[in-house]
Length: 172
Image 1 (tube, helix red, strand yellow):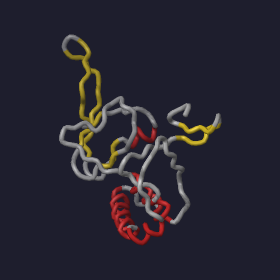
Image 2 (image 1 turned 180 degrees about the horizontal axis):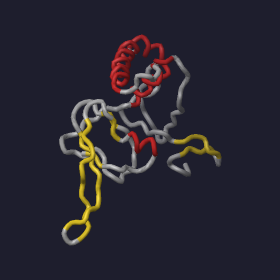
Image 3 (image 1 turned 60 degrees about the horizontal axis):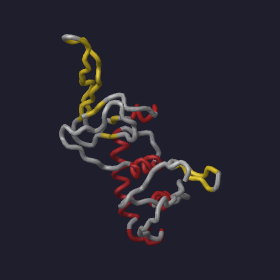
Image 4 (image 1 turned 60 degrees about the vertical axis):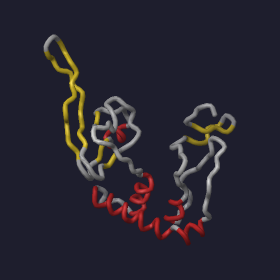
């Protein structure tokens, strides 16, 4: 591959790499749940071994459990902020959101970092800081000032993601 972010066949560009799936992640279930054709192409970038389940077996064994799980997640997102989103869009959001826990005082991201994700606070409190320059004593100094306190059902990083630029704030 000439560019690690793209896939080429010969000299022709074929695919843009959107995400790398790691060990333990599931794919292919969205098409079964929505009864629609595949929405992406999956390409192995190295020798890959995984288990799979035929669609009919997935439907018989796991589909009801997955639907209930997705409905519960969709209800959370809908009640939080996405009242006007279609069920299909909510399902896509649910499938692509991951859970992650941060410890007290652990930095979630820092000002100036590349924006790679958006966070939704499910439980807890986070503080948003901005680095500013002030005149103090013998000359200018940079200090961290608190801009906001965010709690459950509030987003962080969404403006940076929409603008596709580096972090403009640090959160802790």
